[in-house]
Image 1 (spheres, rainbow, N blue to C red):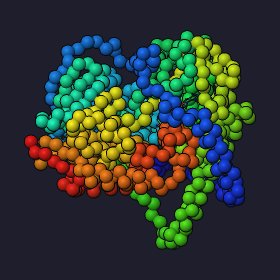
Image 2 (image 1 turned 180 degrees about the vertical axis):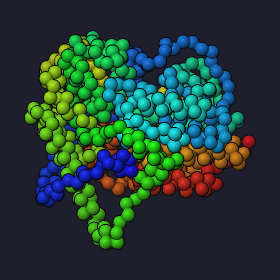
Image 3 (image 1 turned 30 degrees about the vertical axis):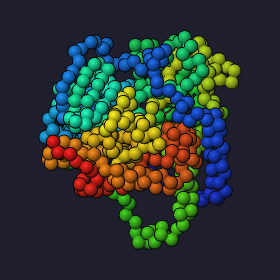
Image 4 (image 1 turned 120 degrees about the horizontal axis):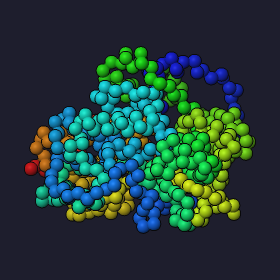
Length: 588
Ligand code: NDP
């Protein structure tokens, strides 16, 4: 993650002393323990992804209410036509719009559920919110915006402000419609146009639609018995109630607080909660891996020396494969596949053991330290980076309730119950995550012959590059399944955004009213995805989580393209260079 071209004085001198080689039996024993811990969790949650609900209706509807926007007031429905319409106003929409503007597209509309642009950075305002990808890589369009982030890692408010600045610079507020949810997107074959309906009674038409609804945008709750009976205050981390907690969390000084979940969100929120609550209970099912967060303010001298185009050069550099010597190449070629996998796994276990050691060195109570140790390969879950999370458990007012993989299964009017013990809380915070990568979330997408995209996907997702699906002309999907995975998500979104803008430009230049992927091109990509998914047993081996569909690893063509980001970018370029081969076109 990140690279060493920024503020380089901070990255020197970190050579680790050589460690005596561990016997293979050490690694085999740990792999055995990983498998036991995974099986324990699989046994507790046979329902897989169905253990959660994002259907926040009826008594759960308050968990979806936007606490940040002004009250929604009635407005006249809109009935008009634009050229490009984005469903969602986060980074996907912003960086693709910037490219469309460069191609001279004037008519661009964002339709967004929140009251402003920003997507994930609009919704996630919990205390401590930050991005753990290096800011110079994560924030898109830094060259275009002539902006250098303030720190090595950016905090939520800075990223949100960057989103707003992009929308202003590219004049995206003019046609944007906020506090509005797209409910249906229907292809009109005779007009060769999309018709879009919203929950505000709008009837919009667009030639091109871009599903930019984000990869983790709809909050979800664990289906816990009695959840709705809790009489205290409760909310989801993406709907933080600052009226209740106060901006500086002083509203929690006399409160007993509980948080369910210990993923990347909780890891950032817990230190603030621990410092400000009277008592804090952290209900853990599986611990996250917590590594050092090596942060520093941006060196102004370094920033001043940056030449125009520095970020795109940095992105290109990051994509470059490491150059091997002839000797190294020969060694690799001589190694069997089993040996390569064994070495990778051992290195992964070494990294995890370093994370365990850090816990032992930081957390004073031995039982708590043991409970905080993750027993799975690094990257089975999103790795976390934080300097204050582990020390928070040394506070006398902070209690880790480790549920040994079982999770909280019961909540009463007073709070969660675990192993017969009632935890009486004033406030319960759900850090239970989000619905993952659903195309057209909240929205029914109907393509040619009225076919609902979910019906088309019933036996498995079918796309070209995760972006196009046959029978849905002029529709582009961003951040969806069958696209590549990238730890720095904006790298992926930028690659897709550049590509989508180029496709739209191609259609406009050739006077094509619509473009649709051919069945052959779609089938080729589905097979590519299946081929690369079968290469490792990682999904089976990993502890359940949203990366592996909570253990439903047999979903062959769902999930991401595993051929690597560079290969994915090459495919984007190849398809773009041969549009005639991959698409069918219709003239106006
Ligand atoms: P996650 O889905 O990662 O975590 C949900 C948590 O809830 C897990 O710890 C899960 O346990 C736990 N859980 C679910 N049900 C129960 C239960 N019944 N009892 C106890 N615990 C339960 O959601 P997050 O919001 O933390 O993170 C989502 C993603 O958002 C991250 O993976 C990351 O991609 C992104 N993010 C990125 C950040 C960044 O810095 N770039 C910061 C924050 C979020 P279990 O692990 O056992 O399933």
